[in-house]
Image 1 (cartoon, rainbow, N blue to C red):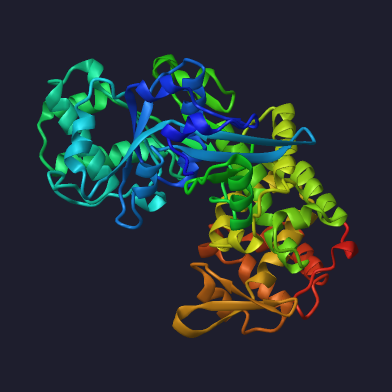
Image 2: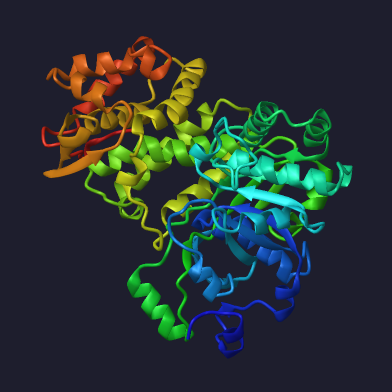
Length: 499
């Protein structure tokens, strides 16, 4: 049988958390742009948990903005789906199965725009959430009276304008708007685009005043690894064990964080934050951004090529190796943590680092290093260079772990151009693809066969790093020294390295 509201009564599995019938009668308080697994495994799960505990008491109308795929599965399953949460917490394995009932219905922007505008006119609506990818929060000069507008900011402006007209500019009719796209100051950026678009559409000044004074655009940060749908073997296994078929099920790690920039007024609207410590509402989310960007993302980036050149395909495989675990722990705790360019309490950083290591060890998440390597040079610039520069504000000693990360990165980027603009490298007798905006630059740099010259050229490239890294005391020599642990075939012998 397929998972649905009607079939819930036929499911009697102690290990599966089921929603109560009363949840299906809750009002629709949230409008969500995006059907992706991150939204369904993070904010939607927080809202679902709150509803089960009699808090917030509101469901989600989801807007599918793209033309790809359909809403058929959501319709068939009444918006229900299973979230399999698996991970390591304090050294112990955690395994949970919850049928999420937060979604009331899924609408298509291209065919249901009138219905979506009807949601905008609802007095129950309080919150807008989005994850349209980083590309989604961009200004497109368009007429927001289109049916529907093309861009997400255009759709959002049309919804806000419809709401303004319906409630005649009432102060209490404003919404809390929370983008979760992975860009810095996502709320502020979205607000600025919506305001500019309102000016371009020559909307009345009174609406502009209402837009700014009665609506809250909140910066937010999300953090949860969600690989997506379980593989076929697990789906079949769970189908037999649970007695139902679920075409919307998703896998996720147990760790979850949704940091939202806001005050007590925002917190009162987002009452679901009371139920789970993973939702944090605070006037400044920079602390959480720095912890995630440096200790999680920065560690991933600096260790990515080290792991791949050592022959590991996934993060878990690498963490099963004693030498790699020793390297990544030393790197995180003794080089990255002290160099974070933000004032963070040492105990807070150490606790977060411990959770990151637990997440890396998760046996249920297949996180491939090649996926992490996408846009590698940009990730190095954004996540690592501020750490490196701040390290040299604290000491003149070259950081050996960062030097190894840089050496492995430069070797990983030893690539050649192929057909249709593709670039490939070779390591451990394996050809791998590279997706990087600087791929052409690295292919040209590697036309030189002298390692010291290659390292010097890469480090001194100010256009690449916004800084001349070759002048940092001892860093170039440290990178070249670490490079010597990588053989001609692109294999790194971790056991020979001292960090």
